[in-house]
Amino acid sequence: MNNIQQSVRAEQPVALPHISVKLGLQNNRLKPRKILGAAGSIACFLLVPAVWITCKYAFGISDRYLPSPVDVVQACSDLEPNVWVHTLYTAGRLALGFLAGVSVGIGLGIATNRFRLLAKILCPIFDGMRSVPAVAIVPFFLLWFGFAESGRLLLVVAGIAFNIAVATHQILSDVPEKQRILFKSFGIESSHLVRSYSIPRILESLLPTIRFSLSTAMGVVIVSELLGSQIGLGYLIQTARNTFSMHVIFLATILLGILNSLMDFLVTRVWSKAIYWR
Image (cartoon, rainbow, N blue to C red; front, side):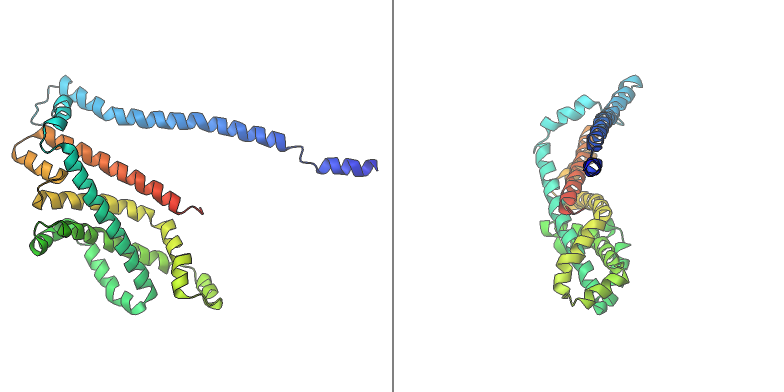
């Protein structure tokens, strides 16, 4: 009887308190690291205006080359229409064009992967079109659509959809052969396979291409506003260049950087929520 009790006691997880203590210590160690990481990010963010102010007032650089931070901040209220209206229009064009381009690119990639004939026809076209800079096709869209908003939207879609389509097609083409055999042996329908396997696989691997395409879409939106728009940050830069308003150009450039960073943060967070199984 004593031997049985001793064996039962030996099987009890007596080491669990030590494990929980170790996990607690590890979590406590992670908190200072997170605090240091956040502090480092804030310090790097504040380093840019600090260098700007130092260079401006320590070396006496002319406003023609480096405007003062006071003039840049004051431009936020001096512009008409307000700079936030310009920012809102640019953000709306970027969001709509980016979402449409990603959707079209993923759809084309799935279609070319499912139908071999379509892949033979479209893949060479995709490879050729994605090598052409998006800025180079702006004159065509201006001639075709004029200054209409639909032309700007389609320009952003054309600027990013081909890269995403090629990346999507490549991701699905890299499916291991043993998995393809497994799907065929179970008789899984193609339509069900797209929902249950293809789209999750794309979501797991496409984020780097999506983030790169976001920066490309930002550049295309600004170029389209530079050449044919009456409102937006690109239009603001164009008019400021004509009037030699360097402080306005600095303000629009700073807002573009902030807007791109916010969009990239939102895309990354939404993408991480979408692939909840990882």
